[in-house]
Image (cartoon, rainbow over the protein chains, first blue to last red):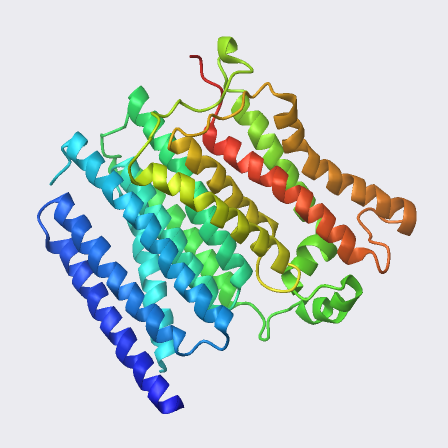
Length: 97
Length: 312
């Protein structure tokens, strides 16, 4: 059972890291602010979600699982808010490049 | 070399790279942005050193609050058009600065390498004396018990910082509300966040304060979260900051350090030493002081970010 859980954790965290790498590549390579934000907010959320999922399998208590998912939810909420704010600022300031 | 060592090396290298970036950045905003990232990575480093209390404080105060204050300063500089010296310094100047910096670095390195092994530590004494305070977290034991005077002065310094910032108020704005009025965000992400997050944030702050007795956490971290929860509705234009002339606001800033000082004199009367705690009452006294201090620190931190009163 532990082996199965460990394998699940490794697979999920690796998949999560893949999304982080993709998001970082997007942040570095995409041409303008909007698409960079897109790369960050989409890829990082999936990445963090997968990592949280993987780590939740290792949590010692139900409280730990809840806290992990709370972290994910809070990050989702805060960058769902900051993403559009940054996009709006970039459009107003014309700092697209 | 284990994976842990590899992670440590990566974190240390990233911290150095960011520190270099902060120093070399030509623009204030870039430097501040890199400084915030630097603070977050420092938090990681503290986690790796298993100093979770320091990590929390570094993330909340070092990266979050200081970053916010520096961003505000950068914005002010940009608006007032403060002169930026674009001329590169002369060669002799560069060499002198380089020699001075290298000397400091070498001295610090020598000091660290000259430390005896094992390093002198008061940790065993703290752990041995901790049961007297009824606390489970040795960091809180040190901050509120064995070195309480340091913490008292830290809390008092915050009140002085608020006074210092208020001293910048122009005469005609004295006693008015601090901070620029924000456009009211009735819809959109910021308004949603400002309505949704504070209840959760306040619960998290209370939790961080409460577990501080036995686990990583405490008043400064809780106060930083509370201050953020106050600043969020202000940023969304949903709440106006109170006028700096309000008596309750000034009392809120002062009451925490005052309560700490009163507890100190209580120790002087009952136990014969300033900030000594009566046996059996130590934990209750510490918790009571921490709760009041948290409120004061939160208000002070928020007022630091809000800045002096502005004329409207």
